[in-house]
Image (cartoon, rainbow over all chains, first blue to last red):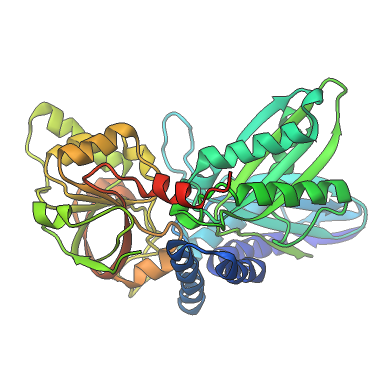
Length: 280
Length: 185
C-alpha cells in the first residue's frame, strides 16, 4: 500500500481550481485560432479574436477568463493500492475547493438548497465522481462547469431501433435548440449507452477530453466528425451572431447498454472548456 | 457588418432609432448592473406603485454577476450572464424608461415586442470575455440593494465597452438573421 496524506489531495485540488479558471488550455486556444481561419462571418471572427484576447488578459492579470467560475466537478481515479492518511478524503477535496475559490477570487456559484437558493458561500460541495482503478496513484481531474451551458444540456432515452441516426439527430437538435445561450463556440460532450444516470456521467466525462482528440473506436470517431459537421452547418456561429464555427469539437463516450435501452446524453460546454488534471 | 457606433447614457429616442440589429456598438460612461434578485425587487416596487431606488430613465442595464474583487482592483471578472432569466421582468423595467439592456443569449417574444413598444434595444456582450470586459470598467459603486451582494445594483463607469445589437426597436433579431445567413440546409 502507498500512503497518501489527504493534505496533498487538498493542495492539488486547490491549485487545479485556480489554474483551470485562470489559464485557458492550449487545446482550446489552438481551436480558437483554427476556428478563426474557418469562420466566414465577420461578427464570428470578431468574437473569436476577442476570446483569444480575453484568454491573454486573464493569464497576464491572473483574472478568471469567465465570471462564472463554475460548479466544481471532480473526476477522481483512485488506485486500489492507495491508503489515504491524515483525514477524510471527501472533506480534503471540499477543503481544497473552499480554499481555491477563496484565494483565487473565484465566484461562488453553489446554492445549498435548489428551492431556497441560499449560497453556500464557498462553492462546495464539489460534485465528486470516484473510480477505483489498479495501481497506487490518484488522478484528479477538475472541470469547473458554468451554468449557462449546463442549462442547455439534455438527456433522452431513445429506442434501440433509433440507432446511429437517432443519436446524431438528438445531439444536433439539442445544439440547435440551445442556439446562442451556451456561449458558442461550444464543445459537445455526448454519452451513449449505459443506464439513465450513467449516460449523463459519460457526457460530462467526454468534456474532459482534449479538443481535437478522437474516439479510439473508428465508428464513434466518425460519428463525432459527422455530428461536428452537422452542428457547424446550423449557422449559429460564435456567440450566436451567425457563422460557421458553432462547435469546436464533439466528444463521445460509450458504454454497454441494456437490450431494451438506448440512453443518450448531451452535455454542452461553453467556449471556456476548462479541465485540468494531475496525478499524485 | 456596419461601422462601430458609440453611445452613452442617458440614451435618447434618437440614439435608439439609430441602432440596428448587427451593429457593433461601443459604450462609454454610465451603466447600471442588475440581475435576477434585483429585478425581482424592482418589479415588486413597480407593481406596488412605489418609488424605485434608482431613476431608470434613459439608462443601460447590464446583467452581470462578477467574481470577487481582488485588493486594488475596481471589480472582478465581469462578463454577461444569460438574459433569458430576466425575461419575466424586462417588459416592466422597459416601461420605466430603460433604453438598453446588455446580456447574452436569446430573449422571449414578449421582450422583443416590449423593445419595439418602448423604443429600446437588447445588446449582447461577449459571453465569457469577462477578463477583457473587466479592463473596460473604470469604477464601480453600489447604489441599491447592498444586501444582495454580487446581485446588488451597481453603477459602473465604462470606457470602450464593446457590444453588438441583437434586438433593435424595429423587431429585428441578429440571432435569427445570423443563423439564416450561414445555415447550410
